[in-house]
Image (cartoon, rainbow over all chains, first blue to last red; front, side):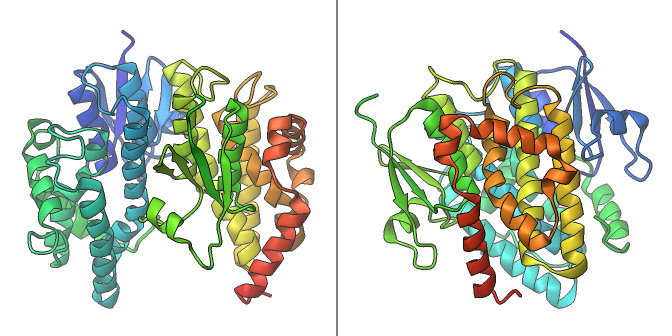
Length: 219
Length: 220
C-alpha cells in the first residue's frame, strides 16, 4: 500500500482527529510537524487553497480539510467502520458532525475572549452544548453507541482540549452540574487508549494556550 | 420505490433548497414540495428541524434529513441505481467533498456580504467572491461539469448560486461574467439540462426577493 503522511500541528485538535482515525484503522503513517508561522514548501504545495493543517498525503495525493480527510480514511480503510451503514443513520451522524462545525465559532469566542466577552461566549457555548447533549448524544455512552465513531472523533476537542482552555481561562463550561451526560462522555473518550495516548500533555497545551492567548488574535 | 413518501420543506429562493430539488430531479424522484414561511415557521418545520429550524428539510417516509449537502449525499446513497453524484474512487470522492465544502465556505458567505454590506466591506466581499470563483474555474479545467461528463456533487452544490449572481451584480455594481467568463459559460451549459432549468429559479425574481430583504433589514 502506498505510504501515508500526515502534516499536522501538535496543539491542534484538527490534527489529533486524523491521528485517532488512522490509529483506529491500524494505518501506518509518517507524521510531519508543521511550523504554522513558517509553512513548509510541501504544505503550500499540498494545500494551496487554505495553506492549513492537517493535510493527509496518500501516495503523492493530498487531501485537505479534516472532515474530508476523515471520510476518506473511512472509505479507504473500511475495517472497523466509523460511520453507520444505513443511509439515514449516516445522515444523522453527518448532521451532528456538521453541528460541531457550527459550534466552533462559540469555542473560538471562548478561547479568545476575556471579561464580558468571555462570559457571553461561555453562555453561548453552554447553550450550544446543551442541544448536543440532549438531542445528539442522549443516553448513549458514545455518539457511536458502545464504541467511538467519526462523530466522537469530531467532538474530541470537547474533552482534553476544552479542559485545558477552561483551566487557563479560569471559567468552566463543561461540568457535571451543567452537562452531566456530555461531561461523562468526555471523560470516557479521554480514557480510551487511542485518545489518551495521542494527545499532548495538558501542561504543555496550557503553556501553549497561555502564550497564544496573550498574542493578539490573528486568524 | 413506489411506496416512498418524499416531502421537501423549502423556500423557493433558497440556493440550498435548489440543491435538493436538483438532486431529486437528477434521480427522478417524485416528491411533494412544501413552501415554508420563514417569518412564521410552521409546526412541521419546527418538528422536523428542531435544532436549526431551517430549510431545506427532506422528509423521507416520515424521517427528516437536514442540511443541504447532507441531504444530497443521502439522496445519492438511497437512490443509488441512477445518476451517481459522487465518483466511485475514494480520492476523487474526497476532492468532490473538498470543493463542495469550499462552495459552502466561500460562495455563500461572500455572496451574502455583497448584498448585505456597503463600502469597504462590500468591496472586500466582491474580491473574495471573484477570487473564489476563479479557484473553482481552475478546478473545473476543461471538463464540461465538475462531475466530468455528467453533473455531480460539486455541480449540485454550486450551480444554484448562479440564480443569485444577477442580484450580486446589480447590488454590487460589477460583472461576474467579465471576471469569470468560463464559470458563467459553465453555468449556462448546466442550465441547458432540463433537470437544472426546472430546479433553478429565475434570477430576476431572486433579485426582487433580495431587494425586499434589503428593505426589511434596513439596508440602503
